[in-house]
Image (tube, rainbow, N blue to C red; front, top):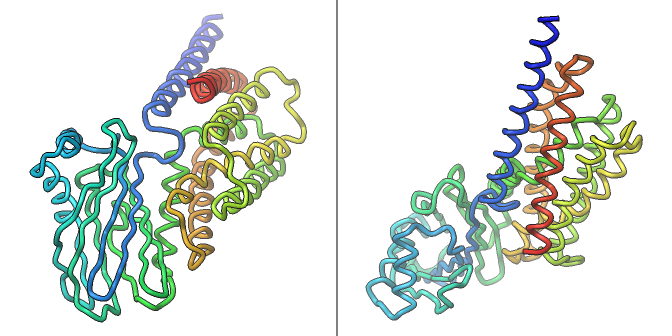
Length: 363
């Protein structure tokens, strides 16, 4: 009797730990945002002969307190504050044309409302004439933090390339007039991995599916269905074939989290063809994934490679999550802890999904 009581207490304790952990994840969801896993800047690098203009749009929420104050003062007409903001770009950006350093010159902070969610500024760089090769290094992460990344579009007469800058990929080399390099595509792979690993709502949905996935064959069907579905809508959204309102997409993603958790709790047995549920909601998650690329306005040149790289990164990140979580589920399978773990985890996921749904749909 004593052993049974101790086991029940241990079981309840494990359930509480799971619930607390998932509630903590929900807190991260609310503070970090749905998909971006941090902040995203959108840069446009325009090359004309020996002049290069670097223009970037930054979210105001990502600014340090000093930058936020300088932006407020600049909007009020302070020339000094305006220059301090531009100096951030001059200090963190390094451009080299044909192997020679490009010198930063004048710039501008574009006017915007004080409460605007983002603002734009640009700096002109003087590079050697007859540019054939442009190297760019972005160290703005040292100012905005390791969770920031910049999606950049480099344009010159007759060509365009894209690159995703982040702390692990700060340098890019562009051959003006040449095709997109494999490394440029690789930067979007890294972006996709980071996007899924820090997209807490996608991870909660995936965890809810895995909790009662069933046999290995059923698990393979679930993962394959989700992959195919979000790949289709990610492509359609980035190509602007089908674009849904972000508010609607975010709300339905939250609803999908609650739905799979409710399935785990209330359906006995859980829906046999769960891959159908995975596919249907995977279509919606694809629209959520697309937000990271759609804002950049990627041109048709090199778009397919960038899109392929990003989607491949999402799949790699998803595979990492499955590889880490599956051994835990396998160890607990057919043990006294399995049912309580599924129940407590699903309840926590359900609560998180409902909170996110009401927040995104009505507030």
